[in-house]
Length: 314
Image 1 (cartoon, helix red, strand yellow):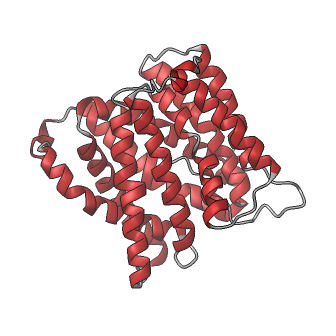
Image 2 (cartoon, rainbow, N blue to C red):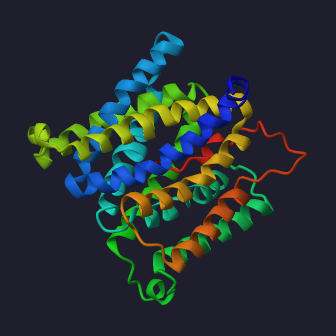
């Protein structure tokens, strides 16, 4: 048993990363029902930043100095991937179920691929085109709940719009991250971004006027903060980038396909959400699309730098 664990520890960690990412939607749904969005986001990243700083000091001993251009990029990362994404994430989860939100956010790899092709001039393969088509089809099925006339008539709900906003924010965050990660280690860049986002969130959180009552939050809320801040952010990102370092981005990214599956299962078991035919069909399309979007032919090295194309933005 010890030998098995030692030989497969990286794969076990990546499996747990998918589980933790899936759990962020459950915890987010609970927090969205109890706290306003900026307060939820601030608590998540205050805790995440604390643990990420500890992880960085343990591994590298210090933070590297950054220049002015890197500083501006870090602020942009904090605005898009932390403040913007999480405001929309918690706002959206007030209106729609965790399982539906996770399927919509699974559009991330497809949108990232499009932006990378337009901005970073990355190669656009036939597999990516097929994957994007499948993912978009699945998302449309989920958003419209199987009735595409809803979209044609412009009757999309606020929850779906907020979560689609998450996709735009995370995709922008990822493309910007690709630029800064040429000079900074991924975990250091993520930590800087979390710190910047946490500072940005202080003022709007204070204006929501909820923090002074934080001692009155129930245990369910605090467990959700822990699940989001430590498990779903600090630990998940650390393990994910460890996996990329050990087995390469393509193989590590395959585990992200489990995120909407884990989210749906936990949503049914913990939140008692119901599975609809449109959700199941849409999920199949999206997961298949995510796989194809990140597919690489055998003659292409799996170590190509496509790590950020598999993030789901949990």
